[in-house]
Length: 414
Length: 113
Image 1 (cartoon, rainbow over the protein chains, first blue to last red):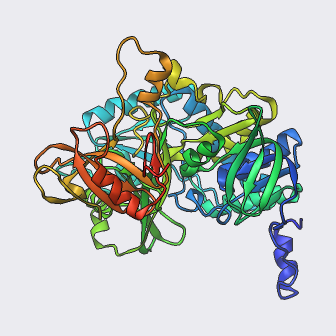
Image 2 (image 1 turned 180 degrees about the horizontal axis):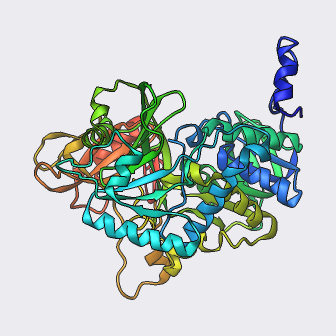
């Protein structure tokens, strides 16, 4: 692999850019791999990367039915934060956030991580209490967050209207080191690094069956033929129930649509990420100048990657009160992704009833921010059978009643 | 936009009039049931790719609960029916079979087997 650098740009400039090579290979699948990862999104590629980097396991195939990073990795609003209430969540999201800080250097690929700060607005009395509690919990967890008063909110976000009649801004939970990154680049950077370690990334290869022999995973049937493996990782987000069904077990999960939209590009007006969870809306400004807006999930099961129009309408209607300038914006694009939501709104990173088959899913609306932490922990779980970061996220927690209840605690927009 | 006809008041209600109530025909387990039964009833979901049966409420209308048969990959609606039943009526099953021969969902299917 040729490294990217200022020198490389200069060198290519002098020879009409003829020396750039493909970022990753597209090989035909081999008949056998030590590890098969199903799903070449951020989580799958990150898992493969850390299997190679931390554990030296490089006989790995990452199989993808569509194109690399074409699922939720390319459909989110790119927010990265770790201000969660529960200890297991804070641990894994903070691990992810800290890995994002050095990801561009680690991967030699610019993921444009921008620690611009994330602010979660308190717009009801309950939210004030909730976020103050989260700030205290974060202090104990070693996650740097603070409670800020409305005057400071206005200072950081001049375009905000603090005194809306329905949703006044009463303060905010502020995480200064949170931010955004370029979502596609995260997938591309990991893919390039994986390919460089000798791993095979096989796109347009749909898994049609999972072969289980004597309670142990033996391989997968795909649209490009059968492939054997010693271990398998399922990281397919919204399609996890479908894939688990092929392997013969069920999941405590439902798949629903989550939508986002972007406006036309405008001049820089907001240099932080603002989340307003009471009204289910969040907004940031991309480097291109577009206002990136995310909303809440639909209520009914859906696999179509498109959602209900009225959810977008609700989100924008509520944002207009807090950000009056939104009413003058023209929206450019709108899209949906299928998120996998568990009973307690926390992910599953777990062994499964099938030996040597591991699952990582259920990130719901918070998958992008967790990619490196999730991959790091999943690789450890797959390589050694145990990871301190994944212990609490086992599938059995529902049977044992040991929920990691983030559905109310984290105030995540659902 | 999702439009479901309320089987009680006959109104063709669009989505903002309705509240989703999750998977239909769940069998409830009471005291004396074992852990697995409670676990499956409370948390395990079909989450199918294709034919699905759901509970909906005509929230901003007559207020009543009813059932709907829908496809989660095309958002097609096969029909709606009363909530006072343990299984989909034959008429609904036939409508699904006409469009999705060979369908099955939990213990229900097109009856071909």
